[in-house]
Amino acid sequence: DVRSIRLVDGTFSIRDSEVRGRIINRTKDDMLVMSGPVIFSGTSFQDIVDLSKTVFLGIVDCSTASFSKESYFVQGRFQQPVLFTQTSFGPHTRFHRSVFASSANFYHARFGGLAEFLEVSFHGAASFSGAQFLSGTGFSGSRFNDIGDFLDARFEGDTYFLFARFEKEGRFRGTTFQSAADFSDAVFANGQDLGQAGFSKPPQLPSSMRTETAMPRTWMDQYGVTGALLLGALLLLGWLLKIK
Image (cartoon, rainbow, N blue to C red; front, side, top):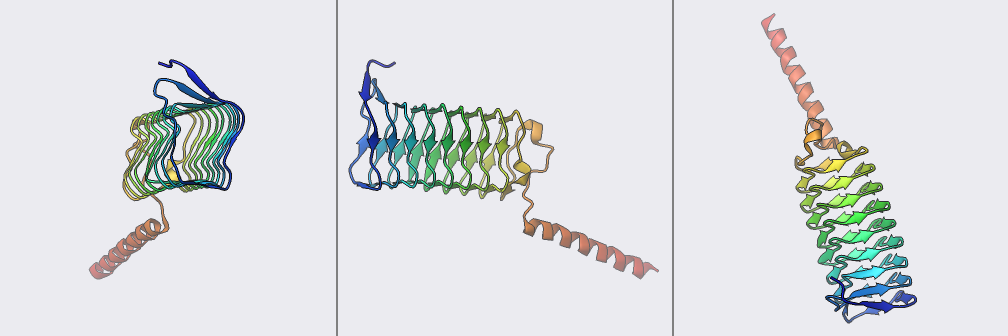
């Protein structure tokens, strides 16, 4: 429950700077509201950034920013477009139960550690195109009300989309999963292209998709299958010639 509201009025801007101290919203029962734009573009944060339980009424621009330590936006609410394009995140990033009322752009973002997007609501388009997830990643329970774009993204750790729901298309063409990928009980209401993603291990798919081809079709796989077929044909031909 919220006991009171703390308001930061106007634009909050820290551009192309280095912040060595912590930025922490210490309110536990209060709500922090940022009424204007929040601009952190190009800024390097050397310590923890915790803006959990914060409402952002204006745009949030963290493009090309870097978070060297933990960055938490738990139960945040973003009312306007959010830009985390080419942003570098540190050892732990949390957007647990956050709400993006407009577009959320994480184009070519880099998540160096654990990335948690559990039970997040994306009401606008969510773009993670070209993003790199270098450790474990969770989108379980999240809802994508618009397009969920993961084109050419790279997941190097275990990745979970359990019970995630895509109301529009879920785009995974060119996406690479280097470890376990679990889509159990996920719902794709308007299509997906998981068959065009690359999996190093067999993924866990929703029951409606388990009959579809889910393993990667990389050039190594294709040449391996082709080679096996050619070898089989040669052996068969040799056997036929031998018995004549």
